[in-house]
Every structure is written in structure tokens, then in C-alpha cells.
Length: 263
Image (cartoon, rainbow, N blue to C red; front, side, top):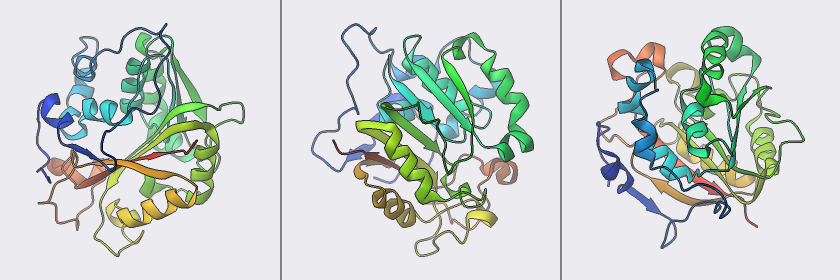
């Protein structure tokens, strides 16, 4: 099913996903001692969220992202190129006080736009379980960070090469940091098939086939994909970056892939 990207209830969003196996499963179960997960929609509805964040929800579908990634209380997760931390905060809410989130930002992103909003984000009480990580994407996590449950790349994979990093090195580093059975979730704006990375700089899009091949080359197996962020009406010929998209922000056709580290 390919839906136009519209504001929808969480139940509709969650019902749109489909799996490469018969029964979708979360990447890892949390210990019995962990608190029961709060529903993803409850995280979205939390009263302490900022109005600026709420304004992005219609295009971001954060509840669906939490469900698709399988993040649960007590998990250790990371977000690559966290920017100002919109998604990082959702991950922090999902893992709860017993979990941990590593928010990674390269130097260029911090200097260009993210330093101030990132600092403000980290100062919020709900983000006290977030660890700031300033590292380049070739080696996004310190060597002592391992046995992660989930790593999320949310609409930034197309930027990796533009920032001077090597996707192969980044994917290998993510593979190393994840525990066996850990999950690597990638969302990005779709370029036209066959364009590779040609539209990465001009349109902030990437060919889905390239992402699949590069991630699988690192040893990952595709576990699940979903149509939640798909928009068949997207012509894929316009700049989907937040600053350039204008009123079309959040309406680009986006693929969402969940890979697993075999183990």
C-alpha cells in the first residue's frame, strides 16, 4: 500500500507496515525488570513537548518511527546526525530513565546550524539520559560504546558523502557497535530509481537501491520495510531539505528500511 503522506492517527500508521518475514518482531526484548513500554502515541502526546516539535509531527510520523524501530524501555540506542534532536528526544522518551541514547553530530552540522538547538535540547529534563557525541560519521561512536540495541538514521543518509565521510566505514562502525540481533533503521527521501547519489546535494535525496546495497555489504540483513512515509504523488524532482522545501516539507516520498545484525 502506498499512502499519500498525510496526518494520520497512530493506529493507521502502525497498520501500514509490512515485513519481509511473516511476523514482525522487535529487535530485542527488554529485561523483565524494566517498566512496561508507554505507547508510542502517548510519547507523542506528552504534555511537556514543545510546540515547535509538535508542528513537525505531521510530516515526521514519530509514533510510527518508534514502533518501526522497536525501541523499548531500558535499551541503548544511537541516532546518527541528530541535528537539533527532534528524533533523539523521542528515543530518549521511549527508552526511559533506565535506557541510554547516544546523539551523534559531526562538526560541520554543529557549526552550521545545530549547536544552539542541540544544547537547548540536552538541557531539557526529559533528555537527561542522552549522551552527546561529537564525532564524524566515518567513526560515529566511541569504541567503548557497544552492544547497542538500535541505531537510527533519520533522513540523513544522503548527507554522508557530502560531509566527506565514507558510507562503507559508517555502516561497518554501526555493525560493530550493535549487539547480535540489533537493528539499524534508515529513513530517507527517495530519488528517482537509477540516479544513485547524483541528487544528494541538489535535491537531498538518494536512490533506495544504493542504500540497500551499501548496508547489506556491511553484513546487515533487511528485516522489514514500511510504506508509512511513502508518497506516490511526489515527483522526486524538488529539493526536500527543510530549508528549501517550504510548504512541501515532510511530504517527500521516503523509504524506511529496518536491517538486522545477524547473530
